[in-house]
Image 1 (cartoon, one colour):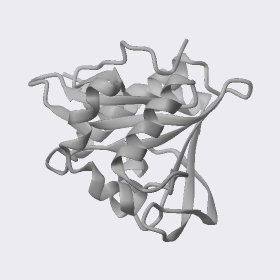
Image 2 (tube, rainbow, N blue to C red; image 1 turned 90 degrees about the vertical axis):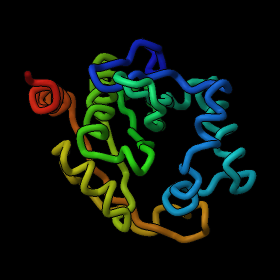
Image 3 (cartoon, rainbow, N blue to C red; image 1 turned 90 degrees about the horizontal axis):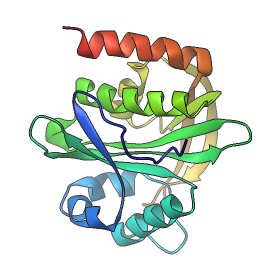
Image 4 (tube, helix red, strand yellow; image 1 turned 120 degrees about the vertical axis):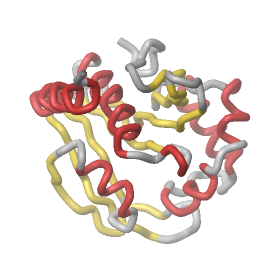
Length: 193
């Protein structure tokens, strides 16, 4: 299975593998404010165009699997999420991107997106699914914590953000067994009738 394959939908969200046709959704959103503060610096300069082009290029060569999100109930653009550091040999992957428009950034929407990503990693037969979170990003730290992964480490001075600040990263992860448990728990909590 390809991590970026279509068909990654649930009751709350529709996932479309990112493509150039999603450019206006990205460029017309408020995502750029988050890029500079939380995203790592990229070779080639810091511009939203550079980030978008890099994501498309990485998607095409299988280095990442990024999705544009739409709400099921009204088809509204609901954000972006994606995997990087895809390692087929060791069956590990990092959930490196999760952004929702500020007016939609709720725990339920975040968890619905992450549930689908955890399911995709599990279906891909991942042995490890990881998050690396800037400890200064209180919102993302609290959202990841709702998934109940294991906090494993702090990488000090790990990377430079797009605005030039060196940051630490806190590593959270699920093993395969923990992914299975999280899927059951999140489905129950989000979609129980």
